[in-house]
Amino acid sequence: MSPSGDTESQVISTYHDHPRFICASCSAVLALQDELISKSFSGRDGRGFLMHSATNVKLGKKEDRQLLTGVHSVADIFCMGCNDRVGWHYHKAADLSQKYKEGKYLLEREKIVKENNWKLDE
View 1: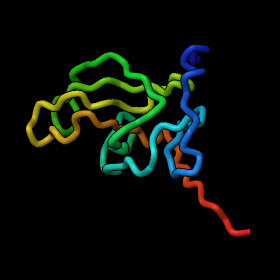
View 2: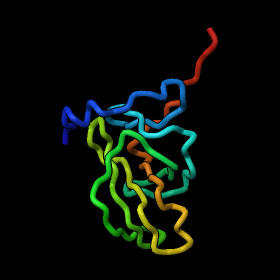
View 3: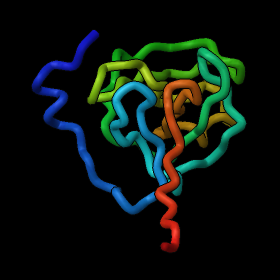
View 4: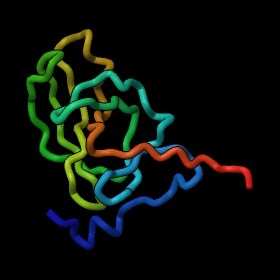
């Protein structure tokens, strides 16, 4: 699926001097590394990172999904630069012990690249 001219023009390209996670397909910034909560999550295709927030993503349809930790109300998230599915957003958790995930994002490790922006002395 290719991005529409409408969504492609909406990609935010800031955070140049900050360590960030970018889309593996189109390099759109998806989250700042400072927003990382945990690397110990599972996505559909392997490891996942739980994040406080995400940028340059659009929400898919909300649905109840059986995950490893129980039923959660989630919506897939798609990169605004290329429309690739990059993870999901937690809307609601049925189990009280899982409520901390509500409003958070899971980015699939295979869909993102860690960009550190280190500066080397010359």
